[in-house]
Each structure stands twice: as structure tokens, then as C-alpha cells.
Amino acid sequence: MFTYALDERIVLRPLSHEHAQPLFELTELSRDRLRQWLPWVDSTTEMSHTAEYIRGVMNQYASNGAVTAGIWVDDELAGVIGLHAIDWNHRSVSIGYWLGRGYEGQGLMTSACRAFIDYALLDLDLHRVEIRCATGNRRSRGIPERLGFVLEGVIREAEKLPQGYVNHAVYGMLQHEWKRIR
Image 1 (tube, rainbow, N blue to C red):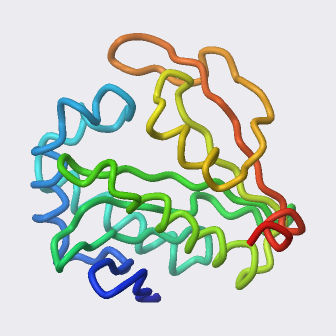
Image 2 (cartoon, rainbow, N blue to C red; image 1 turned 180 degrees about the horizontal axis):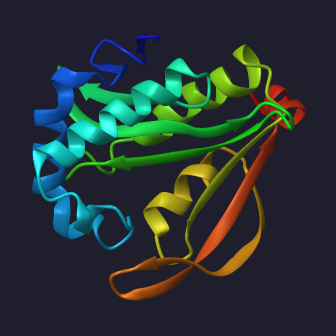
């Protein structure tokens, strides 16, 4: 796995077993905000759930199917970003991400996404990156919009959250587009 410095304070590092406690604590600290947009939050009630998640992403990485990293700011875990379910046949992938309380609005996730898009489209030579987010999640939608993604459409009632079903905005970036704007 990789470690990638975005600047002197911010580093992307693969999640490993020793990160279960800080990741669970960040989830706990941010639970009320995260549960509004992420379906897994309510079922992550013990550190063992977070440890199982980390085992899963480590196994996916080992089988060349996904890449997940923690976002570290001044050696504190701030959030998570990942390439989910790489489709090697179609050379496409989706990016998922979240930040803990107190780390929003600083450009951290936009920078982390830029690095992951470079990795996916330039290093892995994938053809397409997709980002999906709830249409009402303006902060999350701002990231692909700032990075020049194309809004390709809306999937109705794509995800069930505690408040009910939400629509997803689907954003896409193709390799040749990224090379042009990067």
C-alpha cells in the first residue's frame, strides 16, 4: 500500500489494524452528522465493527479490488477516502469519502480526491471515475463540481438512510478529460 503526502501537514495512509480505535472514535465524535448521509453509521456501534471494516478493506486491497486510505492531518485521523470495487474489465471505479467533525471546509477532501483521481486515472490507467452523493448533500456534491466532474444524472431513491430514501447525483470523469484539465 501507499503513503502519499498532500502537503507538510496532510497525509493519505492505508488503514491498518492499529487504526481501528482512532477510526471508531472519529465515527463516534461525528455520528450525528455522518448518519444523515451514510447508511453504515447506525450499524457501527462498537470498535469491533470498525476493526471488521478495516479487515475488509485490507482484504479488498490485497485482491486488487479497492484502495482505502485514512486522511491524516498533523498525525490525527480526519477521515477516509477510497476507490470502491475497481472494475478492471471496464476500467472504472467509484470514489467514496467522509470527513470527521471539525475537518470540513478546509479543502482536505478536495485535495484527497484529486490525489485519488490521479492515482486511478493516471497510475492505474482506469478510464472512468464516478462519484455519487445524495442530492441534498451540498458539501459532498461540491467536491466533484470543484474538480470539474460532469453531472451525468440523478438516480431516484438510490439509498436508504435513517430519514428515508434519498436520490443520488452521479458525477463522472473520464481519463482524457482529467488529463486535459489537470
